[in-house]
Image (tube, rainbow, N blue to C red; front, side, top):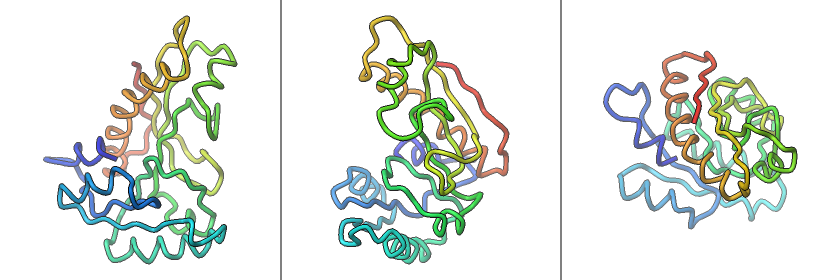
Amino acid sequence: MRALVDDMTGDHPARPCVVVANVADAGGIAWAKERGIPTEVVEHKPFAGDRAAFENELTARLMPHAPDIICLAGFMRKLTGGFTDAWAGRMINIHPSLLPRYKGLHTHARALEAGDTQHGCTVHEVTAALDDGPILGQATIPVMAGDTPDDLAARVLVQEHRLYPAVLRRFASGNRDLLMLEG
């Protein structure tokens, strides 16, 4: 989120209108407030598994800010088709693997266990299917002998901070062509 906001200056076609979190003490909330960006917190726990009610509240908090695009960053909640369909073509996410490989969690360990020689991250449009949707960009890194999941996570994070802002800039301009970066 910080890399996206920091990039949205000058001739960038987008500007941050709100930062939303589902955890009140998320670091991005305080960071956004310090920069004068409106914030909203919609805790998911009070909804006790009622995804539709959670998403209705999320929508209610988003709408006054009139976002054109939603960028998920560290939002670890699966969204239903009701929510994703309403934002179809206007919601993107970053995932720490070269999709379609390793959807879900523990991507770095899974890449190592599989003996992959390349790993990386993917920016994709969000659909109701987990870590699915049209791929907009990928950044690759080599997997080196002796790498641990933490090593991969650190190197992938560097690429995430390059890839996501670059894809958002293009996406906000209407360009959905695949962007490939090497690390």
